[in-house]
Length: 207
View 1 (cartoon, rainbow, N blue to C red):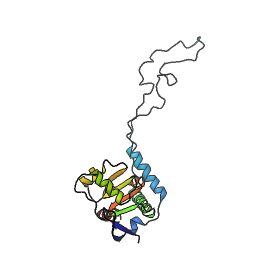
View 2: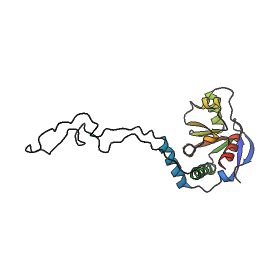
View 3: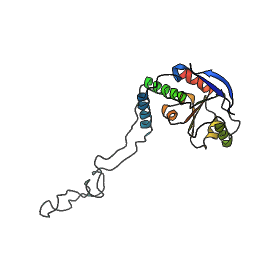
């Protein structure tokens, strides 16, 4: 069992708890993490790109010059791909890039990145993350107190409006609920801050 200190919002240790070894102490599988990150990035693609083929470009209906006798290469249209202003060969069209990966693969990847955060000393557990009002300055002081790095992923047990709005203007901070955490956001952060309640939710949902 891996133990970790729990701190308050002032950065002072309040207790020591044991982390769930089934989630925070597993064998890291880098290939599975790669597969899931690739899937997440593919699902984020809009796929709205669109270019015109030679059939869709306006003009080019008339043969530019006769077939023989000019000394030039034969041409059938000024909208052929080799012409300036012509159509695009194999033009990209709108498409859906999203696909799914098996649930067990996603679960293993999540456990792998959470374990890596523990091993790298980038996991910070806070006893209770709450704010009485929307105050970006107070939130920035909280990050300073717990010694969080610039790119921070903050996980709460449930949606907290004051915390979310206070963190919104702090550069590099991403806030999420425990049940919606994903591999890419965790991997892309330098510090992972989790409330004690969110830690229990993660253990229940992803065990």
